[in-house]
Picture 1 (cartoon, helix red, strand yellow):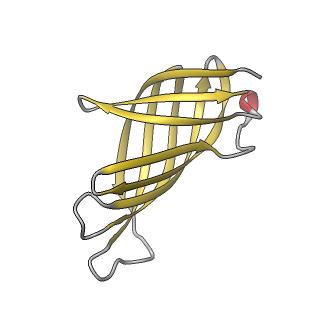
Picture 2 (cartoon, helix red, strand yellow):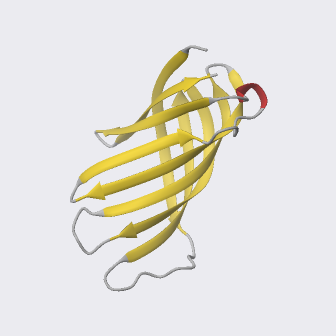
Length: 132
């Protein structure tokens, strides 16, 4: 298996959802829906959910999310699930997006990989490194 890398852009729409847990003592807990449209090497849509925690400290927060991506990856049809783990420590952010093992479907069965996200001049870009 060889590692491939693709890049592209995506748009994202987030909307608040009713959550179970409510923050206390200055912490704001949130739950959001995620809808994305990917273009470039990945032509796909995704839907998912995000849970977040905003602390009283400016620039410190965390989130986790799961999104299912359906479409075409380098000409192959199918889907996969991305798992997010993001933290921000006084403005220094760390974000991990990995393909959930064995979540690939159709022509994307066996897909593994990780995605990085960049925001440049307000445009969301992705760099997706994967093996299939």
